Image (cartoon, rainbow, N blue to C red; front, side, top):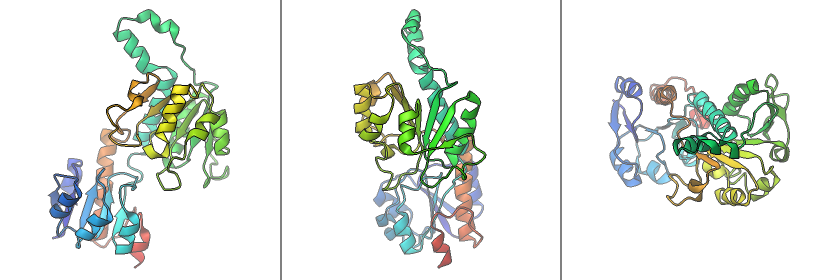
Length: 318
């Protein structure tokens, strides 16, 4: 019987699904040396946030497939996996709605200063409400950098707020966006025109620090930036500088350039910043779907069935 190594805890339904078909080995550490030791003889590794490097792949000769619990595979050396003939699969549709809802929540919370108002109320500073103005979404402009699956859901959810919706994506034309209430523009236009800028793109070398000092200087001083994709897509130091200088009004962040962030991260002291601990995708439904879809990917490959969500499909052609 093939063995499947779980680097972290996943939904019980997915564990049960795997145990019906394979021997399941539950890891106890995401330290590289310890994962190599514990996963000896395993044909598959199913990961959440653990990093799977070339060293780890080379240290587990039996490895055939790596499954990502979720969409982003930036914590897997996909290039090395491909070179070794190891398939990588993911769960690209399992958490879309959860993340899209979280993005809308951050936007609404920024516009209504929800965290600040909650704090004032709890401290008995009820009448300080008059010192803070909030923003209506009706008539405001939201701009989205990256019009992938999650961003398209965000567009649909925001369409009911009577906002102007702009988007920029080098791989998406206006024709490609047909049927969505969105106008495709340049990235510069998104930064210049938007009251809310949502950055939602995968992390690649080409998107590292995609948003930096130049982009913040293009934004309105009344504009907010939102990121629930990957922290390093935004130059965090440049964002902190822009917030301190009043170049932008605030930020809503589910991700950080370093995770977990240092305890003295300047963002923690900023009342115009709303933070969450990279949990946008962690709804009950999404956690089960991510686990089941990634477990299904392992099962498909090891049992010789067509693979639904291959990341490096060229491995299947060898």
